[in-house]
Image 1 (tube, helix red, strand yellow):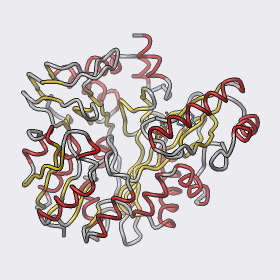
Image 2 (tube, protein in one colour; image 1 turned 90 degrees about the horizontal axis):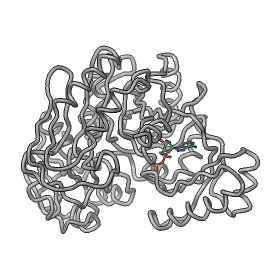
Image 3 (cartoon, protein in one colour; image 1 turned 120 degrees about the horizontal axis):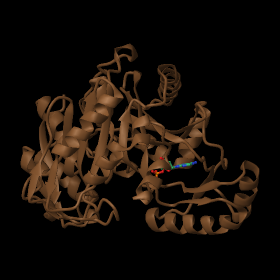
Image 4 (spheres, protein in one colour; image 1 turned 60 degrees about the vertical axis):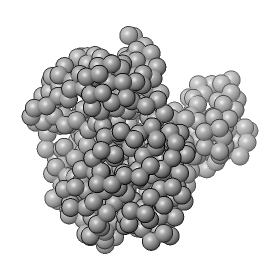
Length: 446
Ligand code: ADP
């Protein structure tokens, strides 16, 4: 088994990985920027190393500093968390070249799925259903126009290297296509250094439903059911549920069987999530994330699995602790992402937290690196807490979430807690009848 793991991340996810390590008797090394010297992940870890100044590119993305920190502390593995270097194939390769274990998939698979065009190609070969669109990268505006005419408007231009909803533009008509094409390419170039774009049919009322999988190095691939992440603003998730309010067990089993067979054929390893749009009873693959996801706790709650523990065990060469029939789904889980932002304008609101009080009680889990007196730095992602509840039924989970949101106090900075309270109290949300466009309209209604 691994003895010491360096956690190449910060915030709640660094804590999440640290907690799994502690319970497994594995020592942890935190890395941090100068802005994070008093952060919770640094306080809890067995050892810590400062890897650079506040800007992420100088610290949490600083590969040389992170590898040096691993060498100095004698770590034998690196867990990348999500974001930062987690989907950087070159990083995974360098970690292994330095004789360390990368807790994640192979560099080849990270590379393949990081290019959404290559990912769709791979899925096409594995008979996974796709959103209709261009067969590959769009070579010219003329090609874009031809394909849009064929698949019919509205269409979406997407960056091959996309992430975080950037480089994505909708065109509702031929008149809008030229601008969408230009803007998507410019944004993609600026954000990812790669202006390759492709086209998809823009679905008008899909849900975002994703499937969690784990694969070991002995040919075992198991899925842990779906998460419904349809509640999004600007293509970014705010609330997630497991299971989906609209999926039947038969639909889940069928999708799970198809996906696990495909990944077995691919020789995939460690954790992964396949994201689909779901409309009119049909699934259409959009992308695969080759890492642990922010919303993984809702899956953990309904399956009773510790996904990080399994990731570590797989990386150590052990067999998956689950066969498919061992995975049982119990009750319903919901996660609210609490960010340090104005709940109406979404303007960032970093700064000092005077009072922090976490909710508790039956079925309540809080994954957060906050503490009273902590100053949320302005340099990083605004997620400050994930509030997760688990209950026997969806209505009970909503009631529990409302109760927990009312107990939670984050004083001194603005947070999205009031928005989450409004969502949970909304009759349409409670009915479970919503699409990926619902939240945007809900927020606009005010
Ligand atoms: P990113 O990697 O930038 O997050 P995704 O491909 O995962 O991009 O898409 C993010 C979100 O954008 C999806 O969850 C969905 O809400 C929306 N989206 C993506 N593709 C389509 C599509 N073809 N039609 C409608 N909405 C889409």
